[in-house]
Image 1: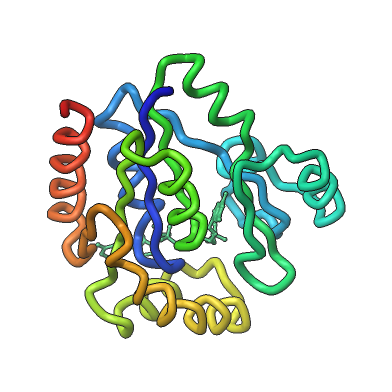
Image 2: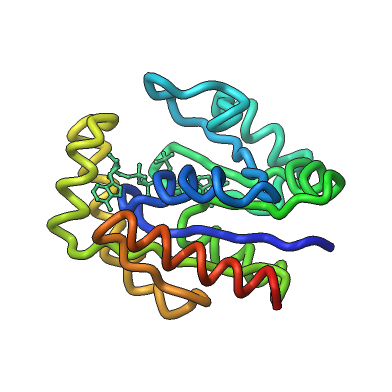
Length: 187
Ligand code: ADP
Ligand code: 5GP
């Protein structure tokens, strides 16, 4: 077994932004590309950001037991970690980076135990989280409402993670994250 770093947080807290910065720093990182049944956003690439599947294709893969874990994160929209991604990344000798919802994060941590470092990305406040979700400009009002609706419950789960990083100033958050990851990888 190799090692894994997993990032969880409510949507809009800054996981993707922090991961992008860290990928440039850690050569050993490889991102686990999840499958999802949601619509592709402008600028996203199939097979880079996600494997975009129809709901039927997604459920077929569930039936074939291709997922390590999967969740219906928002009503009617599923996301899942493919076992093939874990195999591929470890065969190449790399450290897996996961960006998953809070339940998925807890499940993956349970599965990998001490081989995984679980990081919860916390927004400075719920108001800032809402602002960031809106300014990202990728979601409809309905999707923003769904995401915010879920966030209160998700934020309560931070204590179940190994580390919590408050993403207020981005530079500081990236630096703090980089340090805890270095300690984990060198332990
Ligand atoms: P997530 O992947 O957790 O859904 P994103 O990384 O997409 O979140 O971030 C949501 C939005 O907030 C993006 O528009 C991003 O540019 C912005 N953002 C992320 N971190 C910060 C920060 N520290 N300060 C200001 N804006 C940020
Ligand atoms: P988004 O639609 O903003 O890309 O992602 C929505 C949520 O789904 C985020 O919290 C993201 O971390 C989560 N997510 C992405 N991939 C997976 C996955 O493979 N499994 C689980 N459980 N959640 C995921």
